[in-house]
Amino acid sequence: MTSSQDKFTILITGGAGFIGSNLCEHFLTKGHNVVCLDNFATGHRSNIEPFFKNSNFTLFEGDIRNLETCQQAVKNVDYVLHQAALGSVPRSIKDPITSNDVNVSGFLNMLVASRDAGVKRFIYAASSSTYGDSESLPKVEEIIGKPLSPYAITKYVNELYAEIFGRTYGMETIGLRYFNVFGRRQDPNGAYAAVIPKFVLQLMKHESPVINGDGLYSRDFTYIDNVVQMNELAIMTTNKESVNTVFNTAYGDRTTLNQMVNLLKGYLSSYDKAIADVPIIYGPKRVGDIPHSLASVEKAKRLLDYQPKFSFDQGLKEAVDWYWNNLK
Image 1: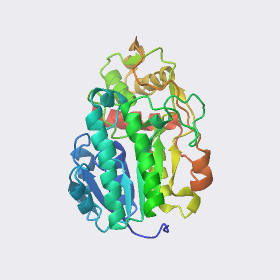
Image 2: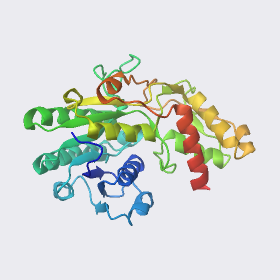
Image 3: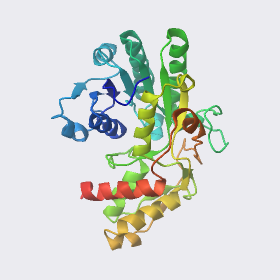
Image 4: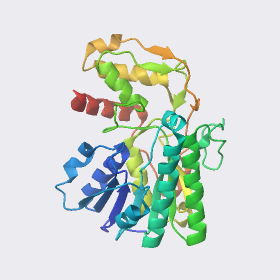
């Protein structure tokens, strides 16, 4: 599609969020023009403030639920990295209508706007939740189960819409099924905070984290830099087989929640020895949770030449360092 020397314009929806802001930073560092579309429902202005002085950065404040906003945001854009969504299984169970409005209607608005603007490629954040009740491990892209939450339904519908737009309108789309992404700038606050930043903040305050269930559920925790790498590969690929399909975006290994929290305590206690003695509390299992998550990344390795740079341990240490230096 393009060479690494080309300069292009990328629209990053949800660009003020955790993953979006890391994508903004990466592509600005590479010298590309970046347009960030965000309504700041879950993203933070502080995540993108360092980019305001960069002449290649444009902030477009707006909501993907408004088609006109999407149409304005995609003008003169080469690639769309669609990250904007309302995440969280529990949030979708509590309020399925808003999750559907943002994740399905907003997604469709962005597809239509991108199609009409002649965007070269539409790359979107899909989700490992699409695997639903499928018990097969590792997860391979072609075998999925039935969704276990409204959120999972919305992310599966995204894949169906992207496939139809590819077939019907000749659009190039690539879906990246994210597996439990973590790292710098992930918000530790709020009712729907992801487990790693939430536990980090609690441990730093000497508060006991609560694990849902017995701690034996496992996840393919994926460091943010691996996700950034996959987005870049999705832009750069010239392999026709890699377009109009979906890829697991993960490291390809799994860690139990017990192992994760023990590693966290170990890394954090190098800063504060008292953290090693903070007890862990076990609560009831959470509705809609998938017991085990492990990705096969063979398809991404074969078609995109993906080589994840950060293991879970390496990424967790980087993340802990960032949180310690930024949350104090």
